[in-house]
Length: 166
Image (tube, rainbow, N blue to C red; front, side, top):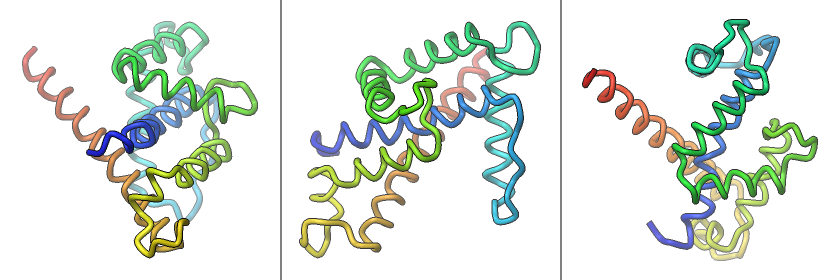
């Protein structure tokens, strides 16, 4: 991997944690849209259940401020110092409402800015016009999704190995 792509790729990889923490923070679950696939909804529900199981110490079915802080601290330990800095910088730049998580609009703004970074354009601009057309943008978004999926798979394998060792 090219060092110039590490920062944007690391930022993109941390984006998956933010919705998971936000989902666990929600007191109500929004209704699923009819065009949402069952698998992503199941994954979101599974992540939310795992977060609650792990961090809901008082058993009230939602994360209070102390529990969210514990989840955030664990996530930052796991991400490492560099990724934690990227995560904090993303919140600093894009968390417009100051709630500590990126909502869908804030995340979209972050990705829009990310795709305009020179390293991203250099990697994905196949026609050399200095900007990403629809096809190049789709390739960029797929690379981000693939990177997140690979990161999740690595985490799941490590978790499974850790549980098997118990």
